[in-house]
Image (cartoon, rainbow, N blue to C red):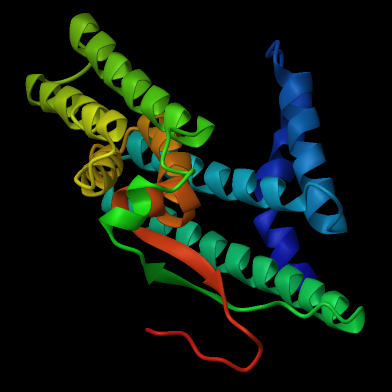
Length: 240
């Protein structure tokens, strides 16, 4: 497992090379890289955010390399490296999760299984969670910011004319979110897919947290998919 951690931490360790340059932000970049490496290698508090950030660095670096050197060998190599980094992230995260499960079981607090159950629209209407949460407001903000960035690129001539459709893709889900309409769920995921299709690192960075929240968040699933979580008693199987 140490070998996987060392490989996964390569971008953070490479950030230390910035100290030998004349770049004004070299100290900050080196400190962030060193902090990420330390958190992942030591496995202490803050290791999960560090794992996610390092994985995003791998993905963004791969995109930058492909855009800078647009050849097939470079593209294949960058994709393979990003896949290998993703595999390493899964291995590291699984190791941490299994270690935590063993610690909990040793204290008599085993992990309890859970499942999503369909509730129906009537249940959602009278539920106290049927209101906009900070996570949903941040989702709206991310969609608005993504649309604004596309508009700025269009005004500066940095985007092609067909990319104006992205503005509609990012703005259309906002009203259904406010109105708490189920159609908002596929529209939000459509906006996430659009960000990946155009391969814009900034748009992808904005949409990835939205994707994670809407995929597993309680309120998005309750309000827009009419699903809710329930814990399973020990030994009982789920309904799926």
